[in-house]
Length: 131
Image (cartoon, rainbow, N blue to C red):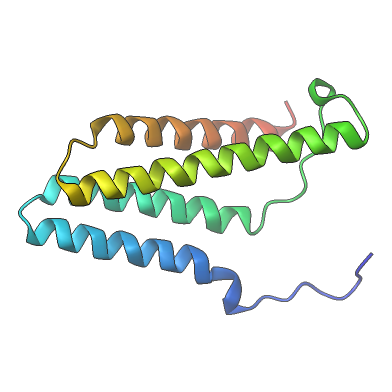
């Protein structure tokens, strides 16, 4: 167990900052191409993803519920579920950006990103209350 105070350095924010900067760049490129609405949607999705990454920096270890069982298998299942969600979310955000830059329709990806963000926000609120 590490007893030293937690280091609060700028390096913790590099990845969320890069994601947010990428959102600004993608929005600017799309706006310059005359697709302002698509650029705003892409910026909103990337800003939400950056917020998710920034929040996860401070996320405490979640208590394991009875749904996952208990012990090592429960922790493994919880980590696997979190890794799956993170991977699918990153792939969804990447697909939205690629489709936006190609000039294709991003509506399905935007709805899926909104569903993922809403689900995560709801689960954080419910888990935070200990329900």
